[in-house]
Length: 226
Image (cartoon, rainbow, N blue to C red; front, side, top):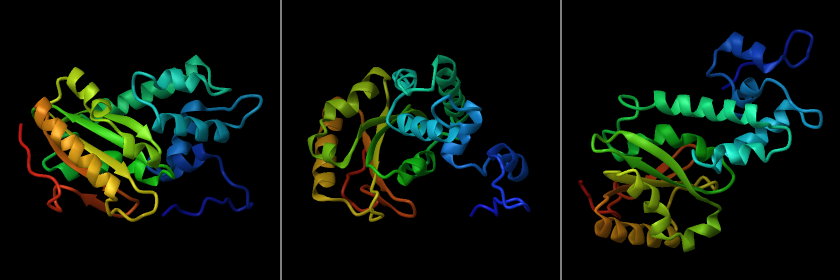
């Protein structure tokens, strides 16, 4: 829980002051972006820009992130590159040993931010032979896309990366992690494709703000080893 963010005068202090006071783990996701951007534009406050940037980040991947960011009015190439570089630096520091997964559900700590989103985000996590995270990729956004999600969309990049295995995950904004009929059908399709392609599907994990559902732990996905 965040501490009191009001000064003695009743004014709300700047996020930089709060971060210096409470530490870099204090800011929310969009507030971290505020610190990176530093300022807004003539037409938008830094807070408004940061909220738009966060949405773009959550719906983008490494190969199209800068392109998506520069489409936001008020974020030029320099700011877009600064955000992309910060994310890439964080990704590199979260590699082995921090990015090693002893069990599939260990991935939750790396994707928990998506549990806070108001739309469903379907993710594919590619792993190497040492069970280290290679890439966390957003496949689609929006609950309506789950029913038409095709295995090719999920495995395409994993094949290019020579991934040894994958884990898929998506969030349930409702707070109920129980799988829907569409979730179960999608998992069956992906599991069948995994066998054909020789890239094991280790788990499908549904996350919420406080709970999760693992298809593997609940016996809805057979154990698969590379």
